[in-house]
Image (cartoon, rainbow, N blue to C red; front, side, top):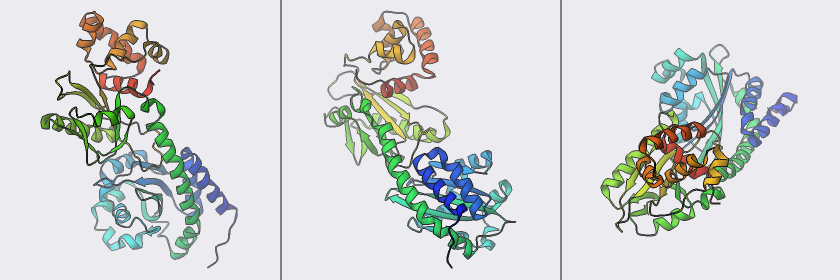
Length: 377
């Protein structure tokens, strides 16, 4: 069957390439796809390699926000189509007939939940692997009333698939570069603190120069199987627990990591280790996929963050910037107050103002902001 190229199809193709260049345009591309394919809703997604299936990026068109929130939080691993995509990452076009029968849908817990929350019933997916570590695609949805995707619908979609695959490849390249720019910008590489980025499996995907030196220093922190490993089993267990908690917070925003002290073989004052989630506001399609960053500071170092820059960047007074600079070295508030020769009560009051001006709420969040936005000047 020859597929005619007309204005509607050209509009869809153009919208896909536009979205590849600017990810904020994916809702528009999804709208063009739903109109052209006689669908009622659509999603643009990426699927990561976590032990349980997870969609770190999900852009939707014509779906209820509360329904999608519940889907992301609890139903993704139970979705038979997602399970099929995980098992068949190289299958370009997937439809209901490949995944599950209509009879089995009526007996499946996931579809029972789905039916209570949405009138969509049928799905048609186009996916690609722009890199071995990346699965991305679009899913089209039809209601029971509109009917399933017939062979003619699938053939029509197959014509568009080539453009979709190329658009995803472009989005991947731009997204990978953007993610690297956000995560490994020069300010990280020049920062005096050791900064490491971890993926959902807790593997190190980036370490700045300071971190590389630290990992080879024999000071109780090393790299093992691409993970951070502490010589003290007790410290290591505490760090693993904090990373696990932060990973669970990354999607729920229930918290913002924390700080712990880690002993050193040399007997010097303990390392200060900050663990916090990486912002997912600008995810991009990327194999790097950093979810957590770890910032290690040395309290023996006399290097402070540049106070004048803190004043300019956050509108702090000289006194507030001095306190923030001390906290940026990993010191707790009592130690910073003692170094500054002010009372603990004064330090607390000053810190409250710093929180307000930096739009943070906890010391871990503040230190994360300072260390990842202030370059070595």
